[in-house]
Length: 457
Image (cartoon, rainbow, N blue to C red; front, side, top):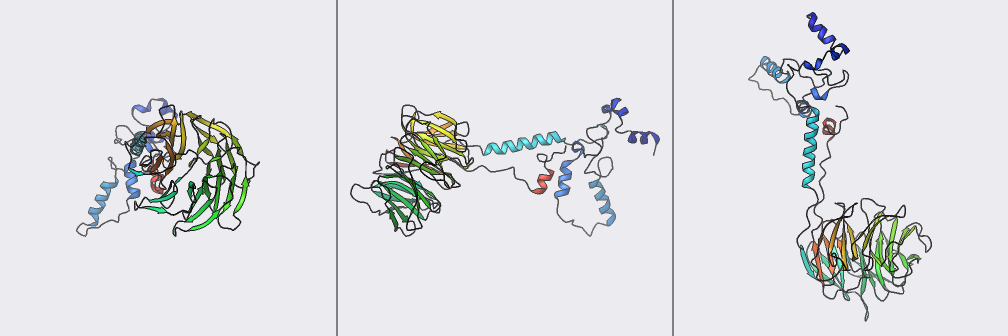
């Protein structure tokens, strides 16, 4: 080896050479013991590692030809073997142009951003996907007479009758519920497995119906006032009544009452179990919200009491992506939506809508909250409104009902919402859109080679 060339290689990263302006002829972008990605041809490296095709040898070509062809494919532009890992700089004059790592990172980031933009929340629909007549629906804020079960069947009480609408077959079935004179359903709720339908009545009884046989399973008569709200937690059915009491029923046993507690001083307007079944939220006509732990339920043993609303609290909804967050909405004299931290017992945020809030629905695919409104002094009266979480900025509204909205419910797939109005219509809205597609999931090999995941540059 010639002395000058030996001196150049041995002095490749010496302080003397670095001080003598080496960048005029050479690149020194990395450490000697760490592979330098900016000097690698990562496209070729990825191809070599991921190419799993077997070599197809043509018998017409001899071994000498194949070796020459292989040399052409595996040697760089200077005739040196291609190196997947580079530990030193290269002369600028002889270095072939390859994409630097920063440029590749930038390209990958732009590609990911463009893909995510395709799945951003779409604009609100201009109209309903379907409208059904709802004659004789009770125009009563304190009732909860519509629920969309996990069997994809919507149950709704119209006057003294109960109807089931199958969203797959689009068929409507009328159920024969046992009611006396001046009696009618005031609340309905499907069990979690959609095998039982609970129906509360104005005369204080509570019925359980078998969904498959359409037969009455049992009738519970433990309240003394109308049962305006019911909610399931596994095999436990919780009911709230005008008699100011909340009762937990075990639907499996003869002595059904598990616990009974009274903390509200007025009628119970809303009940909602958290997704894990550990927390119960109850709203009352005295404007208060109580938070209960499932393991410690008694009249004086509530976890928190929220007193921020100025009117009855019917609308309650637990956040699906932050289990400790509860959304609540107040009646006509309040018109506010509030977010609460059920662990700390604090109000996270609040917005004024200036309209009665009859229902709230989170969407599990997108971080948004839908509110249904009744009477109001502002622009949101009698319409649906969509809010972005956690900022609670308004995304849009839908005003198609001729009078106030009474109830809202969401399909089990999280794509459709139905609103029931005092205009005696059920309106279905494809408001949420499909779930976002996650493009960030990579295979093990792609994650190893990806510039987004590797800390080495």
